[in-house]
Length: 115
Length: 115
Image (cartoon, rainbow over all chains, first blue to last red):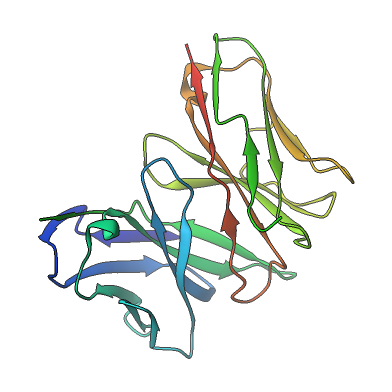
């Protein structure tokens, strides 16, 4: 069964600090890994997408890494802001026979940035 | 439009009543996906469409759930005879294709409460 596990479950940091969120997955056949940000009461918004051959990708203050050998990914947030408070969801895409992808979602890391 | 639109935002139904949710994908996107998120937990895939054709329905509880994407109309997800456990946020997402690393763009969700 395809699974995506995230840690920590929740995290509180002070504004301006950095943090790193972790994602481990067992998804086969692997197609790509995505990080989404979900604000309270909103739909998820894509931050990064990485394929098998990519091991790092940045989007502003967000940097994602991927180690396809160990099946691990991380999302690093630099110089956190209050607006970074949200749930961060790791999503792994499996390739389907006949084409297409199917997404497996992690349960998310709830990040709170405080003054 | 440039955003996935979902209506209604909130829906309250008594157990056993019917619920119908709507989704307008981003213009030009040919794939539509429906997900169920219970209590801020992981997203459960329900069904996907390629234009008006069902692409993958492996996540659908077929007894009470049905979905359509008809030409020139919003896509719909219908739940007959709702149960308490159907209470969740239902997200619709759309993408240009379902292959490779195409981003899925999510709508704001419809919050269904079954009493």
